[in-house]
Length: 78
Image (tube, rainbow, N blue to C red; front, top):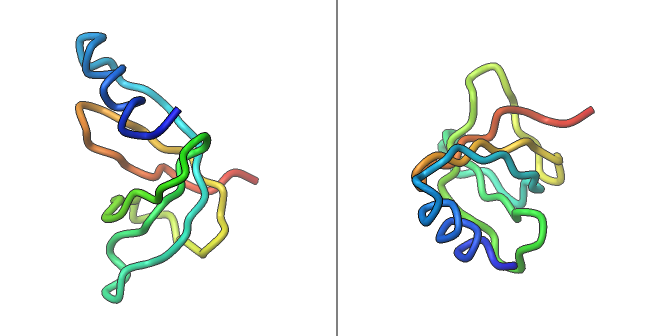
């Protein structure tokens, strides 16, 4: 399932909050956003925000919180 399909599915379910896993593919030049390849998808999502307590590194496996189209990386899985 592509990430866009996941988002549509969430939107059709009264915008419930969902948790997904993904892999960091890049950091922005200002180090304020990351790109993430969501598990089950073939296209990375860009401009994903992350918690200030997390320092992202390419290839990190992260937990993603999805709410009404907003995606936030909560942190790295150990």
